[in-house]
Length: 136
Image (cartoon, rainbow, N blue to C red):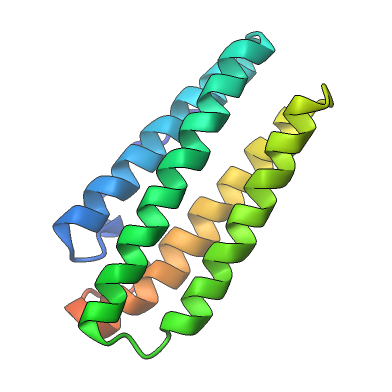
């Protein structure tokens, strides 16, 4: 899979959240490159841990900002975050048990980027910060 480069069209209109999305994308690209090269479980595991930790930080930041801004869809957005964390924990358990998971994990990350960041996050971006939908 080719490296994904950040596009200004993906901005949610909030500098801190955009920076965090860019960092998530960077970690995703590192993971994808390591998995594609067949790197050992140590490197893949390290990147998975970095992604889980940074995701938890990002979700907490995003939820705080959305609450401060009075986002009407906050509870639904929190539920989506909880589902993502549960899925990440499942991949973490797969790694710990020595199960192969990289193909499913790469697919999940692509879905996450496309569905959560480019669709669900753009919902609040449009409502709170006047950012047009990603397809414009």
